[in-house]
Image (cartoon, rainbow, N blue to C red; front, side):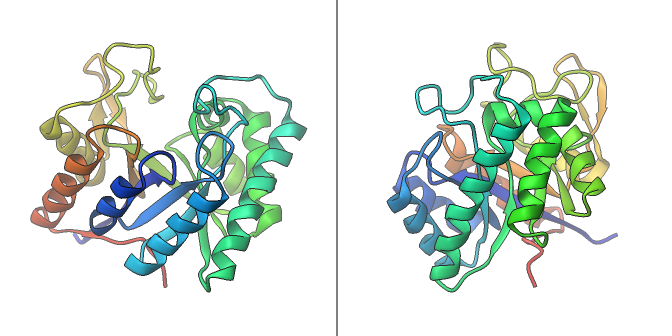
Amino acid sequence: MNLSIDINADLGELDADLDAAMMPFISSASIACGFHAGSPTRMRETVLLCLKFGVAIGAHPSYYDRTDFGRRELGLDADTIYSLTLYQIGALKAMVAAEGGRLRHVKPHGALYNRSAVDAEAAHAVASAVRDADAGLVLVGLYGSKLIDAGSTLGLTTWAEGFADRRYTDNGLLLPRSHAAALITETDDAIAQALAMVKDGVIPSVNGHPVRMAVDTVCLHGDGKHALPFAAALHTAFHAAGITITSGQA
C-alpha cells in the first residue's frame, strides 16, 4: 500500500530564522494572521518563504489574544467567531494572491481550534467563514472533531490533523497544555506517534488506551523549542518508511 502524508507547521509566529530552517522538511504551513502572533510584514515574509520553497500556504486564524498567544478561551459568540475568522482569512488570502500564489487551507489556532473541536456552533462559524471566503479552501481540524463535521456538512474539503508533538486524552482530544505530559519533548516519541497515526491509524492516549487517529496531515508546532529537530527527524523517518510527503497541491 502506498502511503502519503502532509507535514504542516504553524509559522509566522515568533522566529523568522526558524521558519526558514523548517522549510525543507515540511509540505505546508499555517501562517499566523496577526491576532495571536505575527504582523502584516511577517505574514508577507512567510508567504514569500513558502512560495520560494513550494510549501502550501494556509491561514491560521485565532482569537484576538496576543497576551496569551491565542491559547486562552474567550467565550466569544458564534457571530464574532465568524467575523474574526473571515477577516483573517481575507487578509492572508490577499497577500498570497498579490505574490502570485494561492491560499490552500485554513486551520484555526489555539483556543479557537480546541473549542471548534467540541462546540458545534463555534465549528459552524469557523467553517462558514472558510466557505464564504473561498469554498475551494481546505478546512483542517482535529480528527473526529465537530469542525471536520461542520466543514463536511457545508461541502468543504476537510483534512483531519494529528500532532506529532502533543499527547491525547482517551477520547481523542488534545491533552490540555496545563497537564505536565501535554507536550512530547523526545524526538523518538514524536516519530513513533506520527508513524503510528499514518501507518496504523491508532495511537496510545496519555493513559495508554488505543485512540483512533486516521489523519491527512501531521502538525509540528513552529513555536516549540524542538520544532526543527522534530521536523528533520520526521522527514527522514517518513522517507525511510516509504511514506510520501506531499501537500496534495496540483
